[in-house]
Image 1 (cartoon, rainbow, N blue to C red):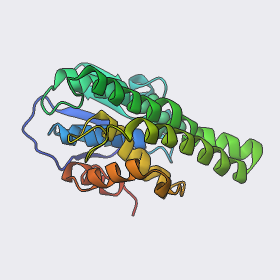
Image 2: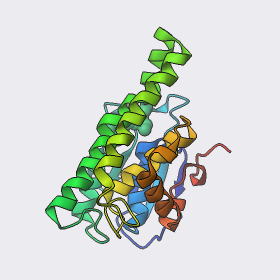
Image 3: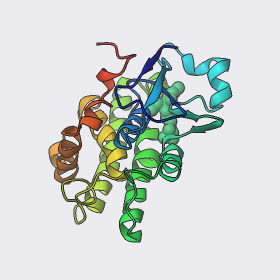
Length: 225
Ligand SMILES: N[C@@H](CCC(=O)N[C@@H](CS)C(=O)NCC(=O)O)C(=O)O
């Protein structure tokens, strides 16, 4: 596994370690959140293509064998949703959840739709399985159907709350989960984002942020150009 530093400020201690894969949207969420909070971290690449998640070393960190995993001293947290909530409590600067209960619930709901009802239905291992059992066309049709279903729900959820970002004028956890998901939908699965104007607009706002730019897959140390 490669070890490199993230491009963000290096003043915070103790040093956080993020196990990540450049193309993983779940890892991307955490990279974006760490950057928004201005937290520096050591990047440890886990090459999912080469099966490095299956090593016994990685299995000790996350028995589910998925990235991301965050290590903060003695604390090991896997699952991007749990990591986000951990970061929010441990490092409250630049809050990623709003104080208003309704807005907070909408942010959590949006993050949950991405992490429970979209990404798990197009994850690599599942799509490989579908392709093996049913063929490449079914793989693409399955992914498209579930991504569009989730994005439509998000479009409806957010259209009355969005401002520059998903729930107003501040970047919150809804954006942290949405922006990588939108990029993957459009670039990897050719989803037509013009059907989701609110989501597309929030993506463009995130894309303009240096914290998001630094979290892009091809800016990571393990990226293959
Ligand atoms: N709910 C988990 C999902 C983690 C997950 O699915 N990670 C993917 C990359 S985005 C993975 O490690 N896949 C490896 C595999 O499918 O073998 C999270 O949000 O962190």
